[in-house]
Length: 522
Image (cartoon, rainbow, N blue to C red):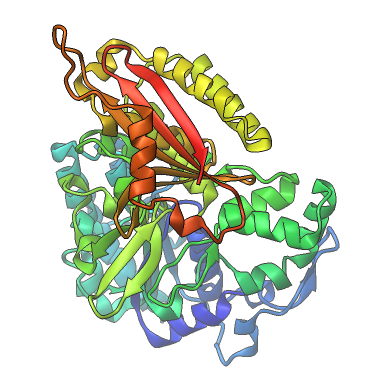
């Protein structure tokens, strides 16, 4: 996939750029490609055949008027391992500066990193006659792993401002600068001195610079998809649809061009199996730790939420909203842009992220200690439910799961919302197509479960504890069914073609479980 048309646009039109993209989305490969261009390695962009017999076509930039002159390139990579201490950060910066000083035979005039950086740029410009290229990869790696540690965050900012704040003042010695990370540089406060950076993260012209577009997938990668389809015993169209469901759906601008996750896509094509590769490898503990410091979060709080443009500039460590970190970490993407109101609708990009995030949220944010065996049994029951439409067996598994939850965890959450929120999160983690609080003309249905053989519209009622010989707030499954009928929750699916089943469920505070349930066809 040839991204060099966009690279050519960058290097000929501007100087300092910043790009935010999720982890494992090709930022480091982009940095390596930029380095090769500025080092004059034209042969890498011409047509050739590898030792393995793979034919490399000529890339766009090799056909342009680019001079292929050799520039001194200073590359700083902060993705190498986990930097946990300021001393480790200092060591990495010192090692990088020292590497280039030895490479070019430059004696540092001082031990101070900012002085060495300035000396490198000025000396290299003077000695080579070429201005310097500075590439900074994953600048915020350490910042994201120290959220909540105010003292360390301040020290990190000071180090980066000290070294890279020199770029603006030394502009006459700078040919090109490119900085990547997950979070916008304004959010981390690192590049306040470098305020001439152009942020291309959400620009329409650069939305395809990382990731795989639909066109690239169905042209360059078509032979690979055909091979994967053969391995899976499916047609090309069937496999393409599953790849789209799992890995597509990322949008990085208002134009909403679909982009596929490149890490998961390559893993799937290479292994012959479609799995949750990106989520299992790109979920930093810092994200979960940050969510724990916020008010309790549910799937419905972030899937389909409206977000103003200003939210993307909110600091990660303010803990006021999870949206900036979830969007830029790749867990949420732009689902729609409403131009009249200048607001974005955010949601999960695809099934891989939706199910992975729900599972992570269940395990880490709710801090549940429920028996994993019961959770596994519930998942098995759900899979069987998809095949057989045997609702009673599935309800039995739900009851067994809730019975396994310790009273200490549940006691402060005893309300109707608690039960259907937990059930919604679990079913989402299992890969269910489930909707919460779906609006109709007369109200909102608690849960709607869309299955291959039918659509289940569920209303959950909560039965409060009995007081003496009287009852307080008793609700039955029949009342729940009547509400579904009265408010027409099932009517919106009348033309779907699948049977629509109304399900009324009653929970008891005494039993802390389902005590009654009923179903009937709509």
